[in-house]
Image (cartoon, rainbow, N blue to C red; front, side, top):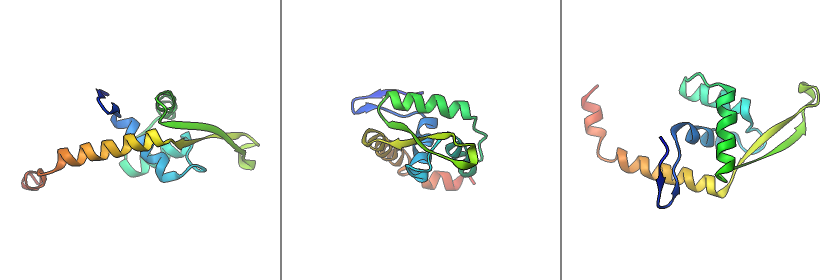
Length: 116
């Protein structure tokens, strides 16, 4: 569930994963299919392309990503990919999420270790 905080919109879990995947891939390699693959490889989750497309549209509406058509690819019959760039607002949201998660994790390590 996404909630609004005083510092701006917060990120849902999947939105955060999409932003992190886009950051990892870089501006020239971040597009829907590569984002699906990156999330799947790193999390073991099956991710649908449609979910990534919808999430990218939502993130673009929030100003957290910008998309543009990349250069045509010969291996795709000349069709260009829509590449994703994380904007400064998106980067700020990722930093805020990281800070919030670190704060929530702080002090739980002993408890988590005990439950193994």
